[in-house]
Image (cartoon, helix red, strand yellow):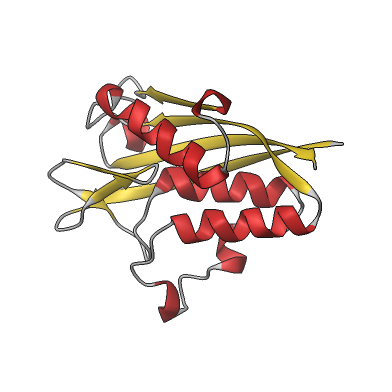
Length: 158
């Protein structure tokens, strides 16, 4: 049996915070605003896993009203979603991520993100794709107000 899940996340830029995407720290003049580390990529991956197992969304499991998650490493969220998938008898088949950002340029960081996501998911890097796109100057992403990410995961029966 196979299940597919789609995840999406978006965060505004915020001064004085590190920029973390796909579990990788990226040099930039601003980070992303959020209750946790605001890693939009890992948040989208978490939501994709939760969606595939029909277990709600990241906000239900890790509410931004809970001080426990303040500044949390988003890898914790991915690991918990994987535990829930494992309990239902699923493992990751593959993961496909698209990051939408005008800046910073992410080409030189995609391989590191791919390796880190694969490590978190317990799969080979060949089972993870990371793509970066701009919004061609359109909308809030195009105006460089923040970064958005989408992720799709396929889960397979163990």
